[in-house]
Length: 420
Image (tube, rainbow, N blue to C red; front, side, top):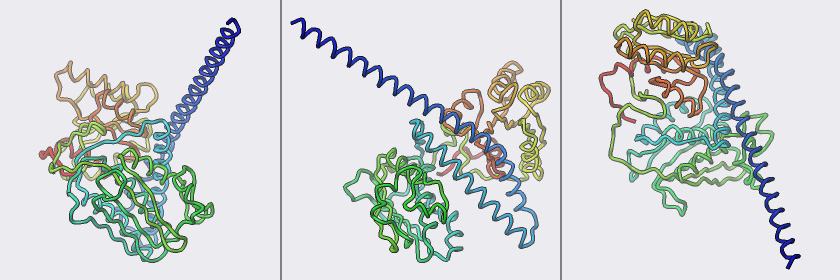
């Protein structure tokens, strides 16, 4: 009997030891993931800050009179900017997936309109390569759905961009139909190309992060090897499934399903709790709109100068502050209709400055300014932090001119509804 008790105690001790070891390993793994997330967020901020100026000045330069050679130089810069932003966003998205922080933002959207936007963006590139691009929806598919249109657009953009990258002649098509496969979901998407194809021995690796079907494709075609891994995760979050068929030299077809309920609601208010109190989709900006007093707050001089360039042909009166404390002092002296508030600044950051301005507005019985957080911090927790501090909208850097003008128009637009 004593032996049995001793053996049981030994087993219990061993089990407790193993549990402690597993708990310790899990804690270390989470700490490593958290540290990587923080590191990537910081790197994203440091890269996006100068990229804000690079993209902004490049887009502004494109609006000026240029000769043919200068125009081609600007186009090269714009393509390089787009590629760099894609890489940054892919790395951040992978970090979100690994940390379990990627979330969906369900809102009503128009499926045909989403495809029209994709065709407008990708059509020129397809034409440049001499490829036929066709995007279509079966007649029995509903018009409006409730889901995360931005993430769905990201999935389709990833797949269509891959097809464009690996197809040198022929055609690329996207077909949307009612899902009649055995996989869960109410919609079926199929992206087919006549590109280089994928060999069967590479099938198992295709959705793995940092992996491409052939290592030589990285050298020849570029890319991080993250797009399909992120795509798979988004599809799974949408309660769907993704798979593909391919043969070397004969092209590839990617299929995926998603679960998004249809809706007859064509309109929704401009409130979007994930982005801010205003949704910029479908808001038209008017260069000659009524004069507003605007304050731009940023500790980086180039960013302040860039926003000034964006607004130089408008009727608005623009002032500048190089930090949070200076912004608070300026707001104490006069009222501003709109404040573009950088978040990460030395001394008083944008969150604290916003809170103080909101308190000041209450004390002075003043009409609240529209405060837009302009930051390179792009995680959902950053959006929530901006809104909880009192900001009306969270704009991720790089902030483009059109985005800035739409943000201004969104606050003073008489029509408070938009079709998505």
